[in-house]
Length: 71
Image 1 (cartoon, rainbow, N blue to C red):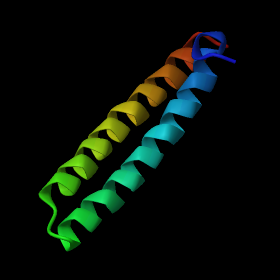
Image 2 (cartoon, rainbow, N blue to C red):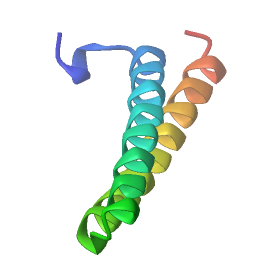
Image 3 (tube, rainbow, N blue to C red):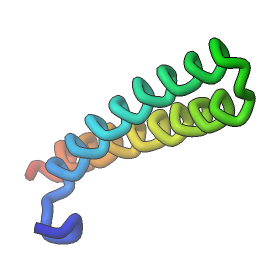
């Protein structure tokens, strides 16, 4: 099933979960970069955390809109 076939609430739950996962993996990657003194890995991890925050926020909005529409 493609994303366009899913209802807004399902996409919202999925985006929220994926966002949290990106935040966790990004934090781990940032920590590894700090421990190994690798600024590129640190930056990549921070970027992944930002992506995760945006993705989680998008998911929450999608779910709220779905709730408001009474689906």
